[in-house]
Amino acid sequence: DTAVSQTPKYLVTQMGNDKSIKCEQNLGHDTMYWYKQDSKKFLKIMFSYNNKELIINETVPNRFSPKSPDKAHLNLHINSLELGDSAVYFCASSPSKLSYNEQFFGPGTRLTVL
Amino acid sequence: EDQVTQSPEALRLQEGESSSLNCSYTVSGLRGLFWYRQDPGKGPEFLFTLYSAGEEKEKERLKATLTKKESFLHITAPKPEDSATYLCAVQADIMNRDDKIIFGKGTRLHILP
Image (cartoon, rainbow over all chains, first blue to last red; front, side, top):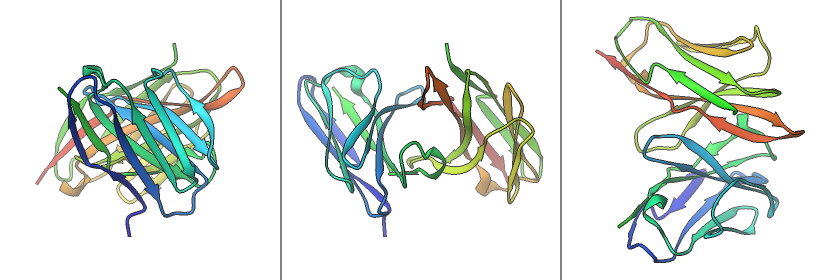
């Protein structure tokens, strides 16, 4: 059983398009996260939701909007895609908020903007 | 500025050749330091958490240590399956908000058989 799953695994799109990445966890965790890993391999936290409530919102353009329909799902919608958005996006979950030592990561979604 | 720096960027070792990876940090109010392992094409996998200077954690061939300014990940008699990128991250208390996590760039470790 996959603990944290993301779809799609690869996403290639044109500049200016709108796209979504979906994430689901079956661990029963309360908290979910979105991270961006750029070409230089830096992993940066973008958002975190705890029980469907936004608790972390780092300096991210307004074109990025997370949505948590329930605590097992955290989707990421990106409007007006730009070249600089190309990266690998990781979803993660943890039992409670800020329990970074108990995070489980998904396999990542490689987004390429042409 | 809060920062996490890992060195070296890449390390090639022969199987059985022990070495150490370094993670230095310049944050105030350290809440925890984490080590993760990341295999190519996969998400990071949690290894250790260290909370205070002097603390050590061990798992198989890996041992993590922490001082006030840096952490070391010691690898003893590594095997080819230890090849991966090792990421260090810190959770810092910024302006009474302890939610910030900062990752280093990682060290790519390659163990030759």
